Length: 290
Length: 269
Image (cartoon, rainbow over all chains, first blue to last red; front, side):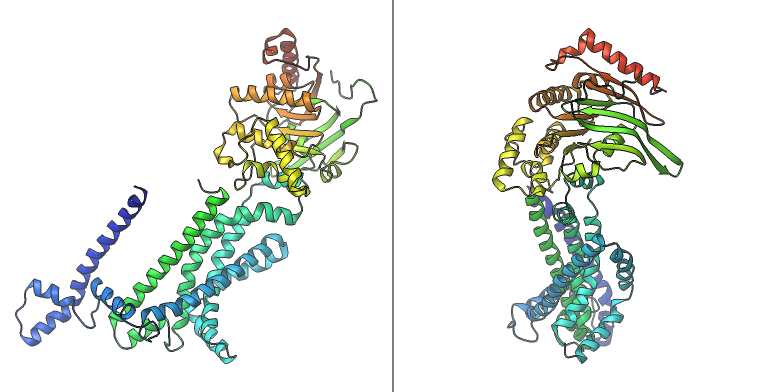
């Protein structure tokens, strides 16, 4: 009953959200619909209102089934290579998300190791790392894209760099905490064995930091996706889920906006879940999860 | 009443020799005299218990021997060299109050940790690990993780680890403090058998009078504020002691002498 007991609460919450969503869809789209009725002089009842508000072309709030239909149309019914395919756009965003996540993780681990092992780095780097995150990403992203385009780097790399910029921070913070987590008794133990600093790092600090690393990576992968989408906005909406979002808002295609939004959310959920699965199996093998 | 430098024969080598050893910690309430003018001599093959209430400096003294703390004045030699040199030569095994096992390693790999750091070959490591696990009665538990073992078994694994690289000196800081009495009795017996079999020098910190008298052939009574040695008692109980020797007259006499020493040092105030 393990799987069922985990799925059931989530399913309940999702069902509740659906009910509330449908309610709001009717409520928010009603004014325009009632307007239409009055213009065309049609007699209407609640039943008609409910049915019609869920079939708008450009609703204020699309009903869930409209979004699902749109997603279906743009994924299954389109060729992957088509410029209208959500899979194509999802793939573009995913590629810069993954590249940014990878670079951010490596950068984060590297910085954390140097901060923990070197006092000079500890004192000088940490304040700058924290400051770097206080600048709103929406302000920096266009600058990064423009600067990198001017030196010939365009497309995947600038977006991945924005993702890197956002995702390295949780990794640094988590890893520093993790590398410093062994308690003094363990450190004393290693000293009684005349362990070198390198041995202390490999045998004690690094394994102790793995749970912290995985926790940070979950945050990092989600925020990396945000970075990729933000990176797609300034370039005038060429490709990617962010581009679809932007294009939808230019042309007032609210269903398109929502379908891109839901797809991005689902992709983030899947990525975090994947990190969670890797984390679970790794920690089990290490004997760290009971 | 102090038998400080007292020992029979100058021919035996002093494993540990301390002379007017002092250690003062600076804290926000002023200086804390953890150790004051400690004179101590420990010979090869001795089983020495350090007993006293909390704050009498017994753990601090053990840590100074292990080069985990630095004395502020006085001198101390371990195996004829400074504690630091002794540590760098891996002259002792240290057992902490808590098992201090690495949670991500199996018991085998935990016991093999010092051997890994020393760079022994895989075959040599495996042989020593198997030998020490058998010595403490944990053979068959090598592949388990620490969380799968009880507290007593974890502490036994910790002792096995301290024995793995065959150092002649064993420093133990209240290793059985967190265990229940039944397990404690059992482990006391095993430790005594181990001592008889290997002839190592053992320094054992405890705050249990029966444990101190049962295990050792020399009892160092310490008192707090400032931490100092009030008495050194040579015990002549037979080396092969069953547990019920704890009810014998000789045992109770020695225990009484320990208690008197503690009282004289104001340990009961």
